[in-house]
Length: 424
Ligand code: AMP
Ligand code: GLY
Image (cartoon, rainbow, N blue to C red):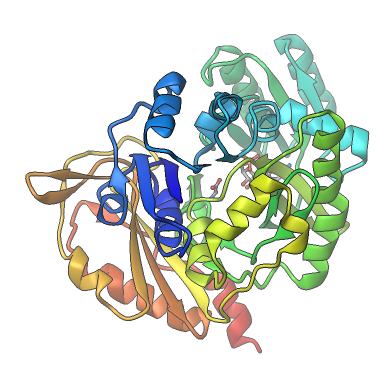
């Protein structure tokens, strides 16, 4: 079959890698793609915001399945427009993608279906938001409603910081003027991923990312500086509890509303003393969590994606390699702030040739036959190992073969899991 993948990040390179290895895949196209994806798929010049153009391309190239990687096109309704044209799509509708696109939408479902989450208030009025803050006190969490690329959340340790965050949101800094103010939850952060066809949920292997830019999980939040799978903090009991008490009721809620959710549902959790609580949903695979999941997936990805589209996930299972996978994200200096683009990256072939290593491109571009940096998160250097320690050592050995003075990465990806390994 012919498949079109939408996106251009490390997540999409990992998905492309798994899709290209599928016996079901004849031709794989990708838009907008990146130079890494270009080595395994046909990267095409297609504006993904121009839905009629995407539909036209799918009809011309006889595309049997479109896989949407990032949230932007989902929230913009690309899935709906493709489906209306009779094209099969892996990824939720615009309505269902509100689980990621609107924190207020998700919170209302949690309230109605009794899903454990932080207590909250939702405000369109600044004065009311400030009054709520004063009544609740700090620490407290302020979130802009809408997509803000992980930058619309402030975990405020005092009231002054909380008030400043509310002022920012209502000044339109994140595009909208609506905020959610929620209770600060204490505990380790964890993620949980399922594939769903709207009725059934198939849990994927566990994976954990590192959100903060600095070693020891310090500094500002980012899209993710690295990840590993499996994630020892998500025990089987916690996975079961999350599936039954958080994910399944959410899938039921969307189905009850007449908009069944088809795609990956990614729950961001805090493991509190009272059990896992939901802090956010994403309507897509995590990036860089997808990179480590794809390295460990034993079964055919395309079969699983098709079963999600066709409503037959109830009959499926997914098997995983026992090996650990770990990925280190290499970023351009300055990330998550302003970065310089266009700096040259050398040594990629030597690093990628190492055993058990895959290098997924994210923000790269190709210029005069050279690979240059073209974004904040630039490469996902991914390795397998029998233990987290071994996977980590391999990933950093590959990182050290990459010659890119203008790049940086964290040096401690997987540290919590390695501590757990060493204490056994
Ligand atoms: P979100 O975009 O909702 O995942 O929030 C970004 C980050 O803020 C999360 O990864 C957490 O580290 C933190 N965070 C979000 N909500 C809460 C909460 N209710 N309590 C504590 N930390 C939170
Ligand atoms: N790694 C976090 C995310 O994909 O949102």
